[in-house]
Image (cartoon, rainbow, N blue to C red; front, side, top):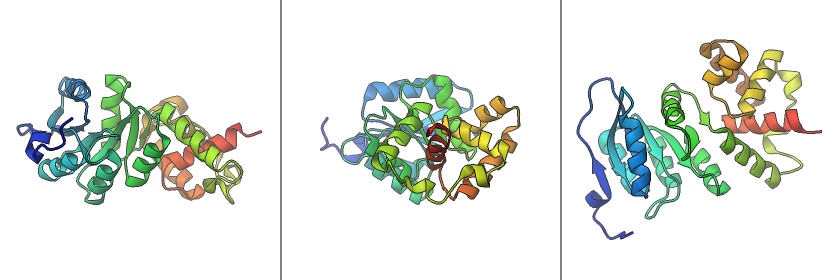
Length: 237
């Protein structure tokens, strides 16, 4: 791809959307992927694509100009990768960021998590999962595809096999209630609050309360950290 283009050639902004519409910025260096995501978004009532970018630098520029509600972010791109773009977009509080990944490079996943991404889904996820993921992050949830959660947990355990940092000094069985332990197990499976609520027969609002308490009691700041604790709690011999 020619990286000598002017900024406006690398980015594309669309017209204004109707009031109340969820505005989406699509960022990926593959035209076919952007087209597919655009079809998913624009075929869903209440959603609109307000812009597209094929690198992180242009993503930041368009996020500043368009103030989208959510950015669908690729990670590996020329000029500037999705990690750097996510970090800047979240630092400026321009938008929520939902990462779409192939999850084959763990360092990108950890980097995007540290940069403030609110969710990770596979590029192969169903249209319904992508739409649900965007709704979830806009509702304050952190979305993690089960496959992505498993990959991150596996990499973290392999990096620190004896003393995972998130587990030091913490025994979930001592600090969590039975219901909170159930919620922790569901988090470890990479489920959203909505799915956890359905599985446990409780409201999504109640799930949010439990998740907040679980993370607070365990001293973690993200669902990935909680998922790591869940894995070590429920699968270790």
